[in-house]
Image (cartoon, rainbow, N blue to C red; front, side, top):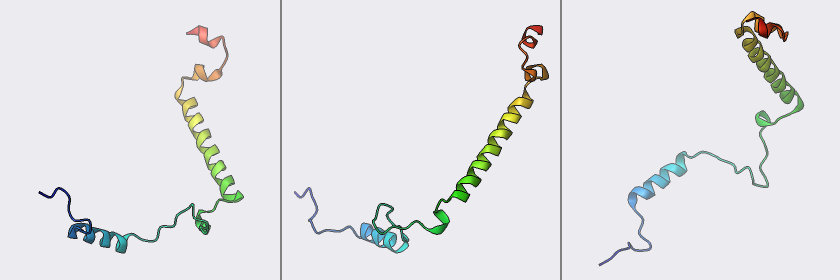
Length: 86
């Protein structure tokens, strides 16, 4: 009774799947490789970083303004005595 297949046996379905994967896989470069160079469109420079920060600043301002406008008017004043009026 044989429990294990022969050491050199390769399942034809597995061989076909590996062949298809190698043909369609594409060119993936390992980022930890010594010869890896970041493509120009993925590089971060000062201008891109500044633009990202400005966009983030605008989003934060819009979020805060939205939260401010959702409160009733008397809560937006911020005067401590207005809390006791209601």
